[in-house]
Image 1 (cartoon, rainbow, N blue to C red):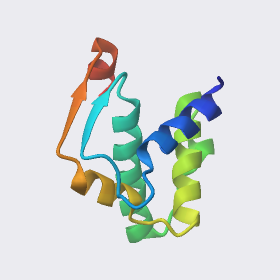
Image 2 (image 1 turned 120 degrees about the vertical axis):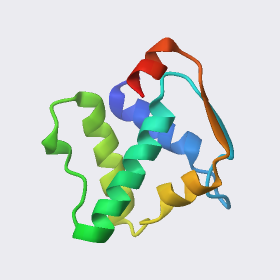
Image 3 (image 1 turned 90 degrees about the vertical axis):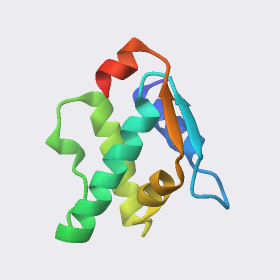
Length: 103
């Protein structure tokens, strides 16, 4: 699996038709938590400044994929996805030292 496929799977894992997202999250590596927080940040910036996430703004290959997803969600009119998701989230547990360090 390449990075693009990995992050697309992460998005699909968090996207629940008919629901805003999970109410509890056991994360492994902090990836789901990362995309949720970056998504909220992107929504706020889009709302305040009208700017979209720019994958060219980073050299980090993983962050490029995250920014592509966030940009696509905003361009499709999904401007509240991540804020709604986090509003319904009751808790997060991180399972790895790597994930805790990352966050």
